[in-house]
Image 1 (cartoon, helix red, strand yellow):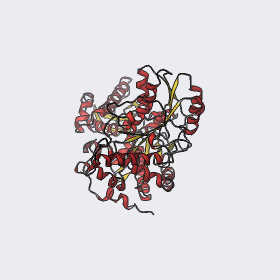
Image 2: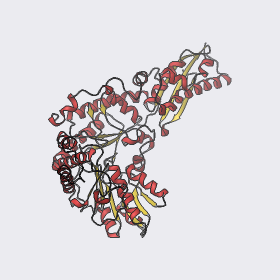
Image 3: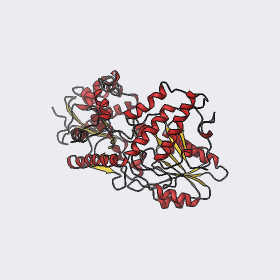
Image 4: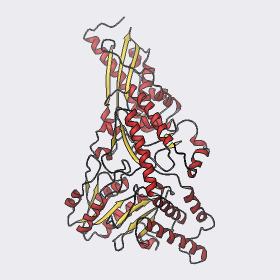
Length: 384
Length: 156
């Protein structure tokens, strides 16, 4: 097996798994219980909160645990909009956000909000000036992702955060694809809200966190108890939360070494594909990217056909984001970057991770070479 | 070259669950066979082909070119080229297999359901792909008949 889809999900790191196990077995207590078993769960919860806060240079009181990155995004977008209804009803986001933000904004539109979807340039980046120009007295929130899930392109979030702060507008960044890949400093980003997810960084699925700067008005989305300062009700999933903290700490500790290694593997992949397979375009290559992600269009070929050839050789990559495969539509992210529909149809996302080796990269390039040759020999179009 | 670290050894040594072994679940073996080894792939020159069709739109995800040679009212030879998803490629291939050797009247009765049945089924959301091959075949026959009407003699 060669797994090259780490932006979809990652394997759980053995050390993360080991850290979680006691909370699924003997330390099963409810963190709200007053007796010792509950207190040990409470202790693990608060230690995890401090560890997650440390990873993004925040205060532990600014961390809310949720059930997923998507839930964090929902709370971060809906929460302030509902809490600030008196002030206004305008939200600014981008055309390349993950569906967790995009679909939430669309649902807010149905509820009477006005949403501005900012365009991106050919590199996939939002122009901070566009953010400044779009802010009106009714604007309550700017939500721009840190790194794109499909292309790995990093947005100028610190600049955008500074503009929002200066204009007195809340700023949320969906950092799900940045966390564990590049350093995150919530303060430097001027972020009021910042979402992360465990399973994108060798942690378990089903747990996320939301950084909420102290004093940020937020209307809870899940009600039913005092958990997480009343912002997210539900008995805390201690094992998963411990897993998130362990995974984030592990990733943050070796960030620089991992980034260098992944960038080398990614560059090797791109260089060999460019050399040995003509007719390819690397999407987002002109912009800064997280080190593990490469989005490549193979001309005259449908991406799904290429993926199936790889699948038959136990090589796993994806086209677009994992949630949209099965629908024939080309990636909206690539179209927003001005990539032609036919090129977008032939786009494959390779997202590398800790367990990949140079051998994996070379075997993948060999498989791609064979598959593109086959598919191009039967293709009725010739764009390359 | 660097080695895989011990941390991830279990991913490569542990046996995958039973349902992960064997054929690809999404497409059956027949579809995979026609996808990896499509039959009747090729092109024909205008002089050689009696009928030609271009259907689909690559902007919308798939396109097919199909050529036929007609001898004594039968499809003597058929060739195609397709751009598209695995479903489009496999159904294109199967449509040409079904068309080969049929009389024009028989070929005109072929439906997308016949193509899907001959492939032992394809996933529900890929059923629309099977129209590609049938539509190309019908259009190529139409092209041939139109040329006949404008008095191009049929090969004998």
